[in-house]
Length: 304
Figure 1 (cartoon, rainbow, N blue to C red):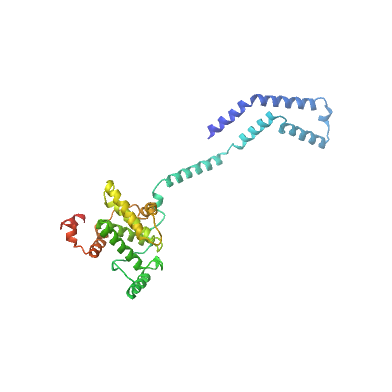
Figure 2: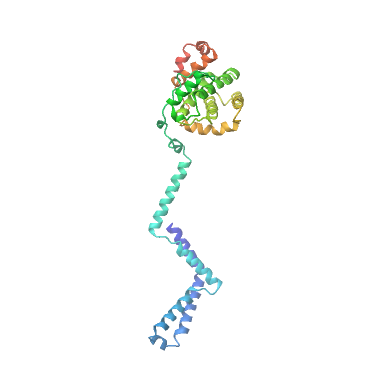
């Protein structure tokens, strides 16, 4: 910074050296012509006359008469205004360091991990929930009990809405599209994790659930294959067709994908014990024998 200031200072002085000499000699001549002929003025004790001569002398120095003088004075004032003290340089360096840290944080995923704490949300228990809840008095009683146990979810997000959403996904994805049960079980686990951290609401429950299915599909399937990519597009379109009210679009799901991934703390890996319960519930709803589906008795043990 000091080197830049010295360079600017020498540049200004070099460019205006001739003009500065002209102003200096002109000032000396004007002072000699005004004061040397009248020697008695130096001996005068009149303070008002002395002050008037001093004011007129300053005015002649500071007021530019030509365009070249105005340009010189402007550059000189700009140069002086850019001179900084040691304290100002320290403050500027500290400000630059803070800006550099901010730019690094904006490019890092760390800021996404620090903006919320999952520990501040209580766990939501869905272990005893049925796989389907049609309208009935029993459903109302279960919704009321669920609301009492989980007041943080809000009055609009009932147990029946969560259960029926999962039921519709099972019917469409597993029965119609033949999606792997492992994939859907992992998606339900992701949805449960987001439910526990307060992400899921009545308004966005379908968007969150469909996005969890996309994340689980990309994590569990061989997405690099063209056939898997085509099945993903069919899967997303089928889920959007389930939403008759909000008219979700595939672009909405893909735009929310990173946000859901962030709320999952960039961790899609689940232990088999975490989604084992969902796996057996889905097979039970599909009326499929787990041993026949797995095919090998040791396959489940290998996964564990």
